[in-house]
Image (cartoon, rainbow, N blue to C red; front, side, top):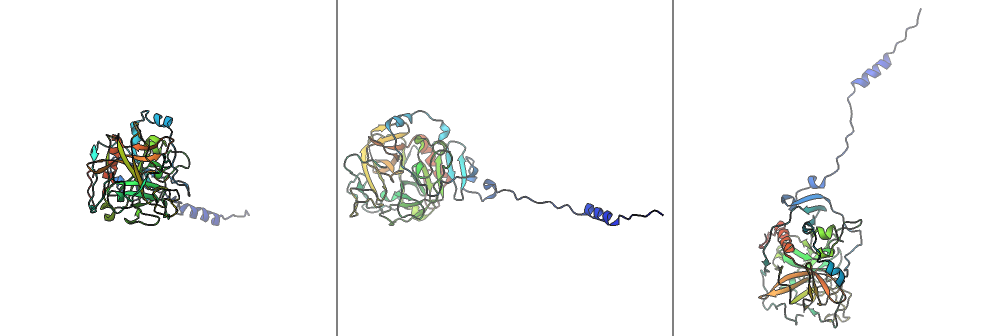
Length: 373
């Protein structure tokens, strides 16, 4: 009699496997910072677009004040693409934004506002107010009245957790600090080039660790494609947008002007603290994060730069070069480079004036009105 084989256990196992629910392993979707994070001011604007995350400068990297020779400066007059003036911005949470269209024409002349003028405020021409190159004797003067307008609008820019600064700037809006591009970004899109984060801004700083007008946080940074993508010295300018505080808005701000740049002008800023300043109130003669300034007349006017014999040192990059109209200071350039026979400022052109207005409009203040808002 043939032996009978029974395969019940195997059949049951196959049937159970067939009837078992299919289990799939879910893969988490990578965050899209432009979609998954809360909207910012620029997300609500049609002329700006989020493009991803920003790259920051390596730890320990800080701005370097470069030189500019006359031959190189002449080459800065060669026409550049118009789109190199398009803005590039980084948000408080590290998102990178690009301006998609050049802004419309803004006011040809924007006058400063001084909401709370101080009695006895001295004019910019008064010399008794008490980048590297000094021409002859150091004739800079100490700007000691830093709670008065306009000196309280001139600001130091410091690295995080530092009581001394390495750049300067000037308020041109209720929360808008104009400075050099290389003070906020290394310039150029190559490897290792990035933004300098967490800058601290001190309007009218009056010595190391002395902030009579407060120490401000700076959540937004803006430059232009010409500097961000190409590292072109013709485009070395930018803006730091400060947190929106009434204490900042009431300091007032400087105007700007994109024409009439010949003639006498002034500047003020913050040299590196350890350098020597002839007008220093410190016994050792060090600059010690006091505000210094001087005046001179334009040496050379290029399409994108202004050459001036005014004395500046490292740390004064970002300082305003300004003229006055009826006693009102108006920025015509931003100190950016030192030279052998003169120092150089990035010039305020019509397209840059338009950018200033557009950037202020994109980041309005709840505490003061600006003509560009």
